[in-house]
Image (cartoon, rainbow, N blue to C red; front, side, top):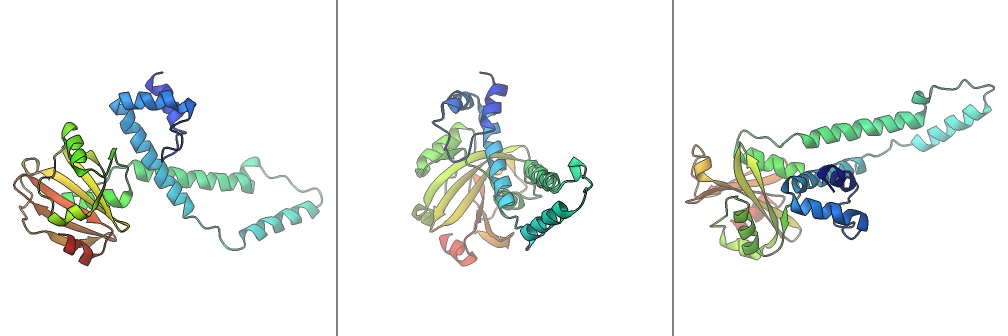
Length: 246
């Protein structure tokens, strides 16, 4: 099986591992595990599908739409020798076209990379857009080892109260052509996403020993530095809760 054949199958792979034991998916998943580029494609594809599903779930039909459709159908059946609409103007096809247009617009939005003129803005936008973790697990030491194997910067001085949080996982990504790391934690239903960048990769970024907090895009962001790295924490927790954690 080559990558094109694997991609064809994996486009139908549902997130959450529900198809992991499907014989039709086994070989394609094995191919993805062996090929980092294919695995990265699968990660992006599943993240995109999750966003599209969420956006489609937000659509609420206007009140009375069902009754209006049924009324129109009854009226049409009573009309003598009704003039047949072109197939592309029939309601079912117009509805399908509208759904496809929404799907394509959401897809284009998701495929655009998160942007930001600063690392803080990039981190907030990245979390707000949604993402998938490459490595999952509650063992933070194991997550750090994995990040090191991937060539990403490893956090060395997280605040002491981070020990109270449960590890979710991590991933590596790039910002302005430099490798950065993302380590995610959770407590009481709130998520804490820590972006780690090497100071040597961003020498113009100010050194901030004391965390600087701000609200952005319905999220809370905090930034600080140590002798080796710059950190940006993005969370959906309240500002007082984040302040206590730091």
